[in-house]
Amino acid sequence: MRIEIDYDRAAYILQTLRKVRQENQFPYFLPEVIPPQIPERMPKGLVIGSPDHVSVLFNSCLIMRGTINSQTAMQQMYRLWEAHRRPFFDPREAMKMDEEWAKEILWESGVRYNHKQNAGFWIKNAEKLCEYWEGNLLKLFEGAITYEEAYHRMIRNNGSPYGFYGFRHKMASLLIYFLTWFSLIDRYSFPFPADFQVSRLFITNGVFRFIDYDGQSNLYAEPFLGEMRKLSLWFEKEYGVDGLEQSDIFWLFASTMCEHNPGNRRRMHPGDYSSESRRVYRGRKVRFIEDLPEEFPGEDKLKWTWRDVREYNRYCRFCPLRETCTLNMPWAYHYRQGRMRPAGEREKPPVNNLDLFDSAM
Image 1 (tube, helix red, strand yellow):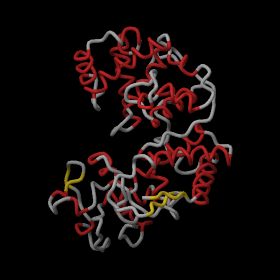
Image 2 (tube, one colour; image 1 turned 45 degrees about the vertical axis):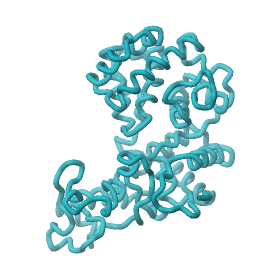
Image 3 (cartoon, one colour; image 1 turned 30 degrees about the vertical axis):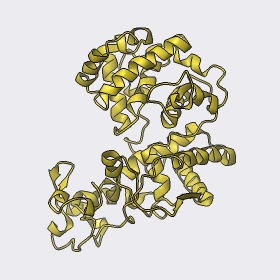
Image 4 (cartoon, one colour; image 1 turned 90 degrees about the vertical axis):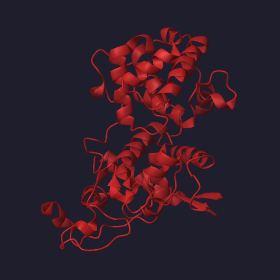
């Protein structure tokens, strides 16, 4: 498979969303379009820039490695800090934790994503901080003028003796983003965190073309992720938009808008489930278009629900990228099968008059 980048389309995506964000237009004025780390959501007593705050940001990256919403993950970290700030958020104490005890505390505190592995990683990473950086994460960035050097110090699987367990490029970028956002380290060039949401945004809007793609293989892997990092650095070189601003533009947009595209919210393609299991949506029964009254006629292969039409009407209908977004890429393939792949073209709901829909609900 060969990957091509449509740089003209990429520039359009950047310029469109940047302008919309600068003018505080939809969706950036929505209350849910906020970074997970904003001070307004921090617990009382957690001081910006304090060692505890830095530790919270650092360890939140470990939790955000996989299938968890970033807002949820950050709130879990805050609750853990309130209940068990010592020993978890002091590297000198965390490195001495009993791993089985740490597993139990993470589970009881609601930090349950991959908690068994994360407990061990938490302890080992605390050891790394103390061995190489005097227990102070910010020392890692001293003299790290380029993101390549910063990545070398953070990513373990590239032969670095300093690298942290569980950290790859996305987590390294995310940590730099958090620390730069709070001005805790110097602002310098780095690629935006290429998570599933942001990757999906660029694929579904036609920025990437996959030549000889079989339609089934996982796209969320190298070399695609390397091309995402390449694209991010190109944005900065050509348009002067650095990784910090790109993260706030793309990450906040994708985690809200693309999440509400009904085609992306689908479990999987209908062929991946039996007819009975297709009627279960996130563990509950739903009403499909064929169940709706006659004023909403039509049969649709994606089995539109009332909720789907409402979501489309409130988000996709007014999306600034609605003309370039052409594909569905459901979260279920990634979160349940570890794959990211397209699942058909994005469609409009089989409803004649969307202006009347909300009043008919």
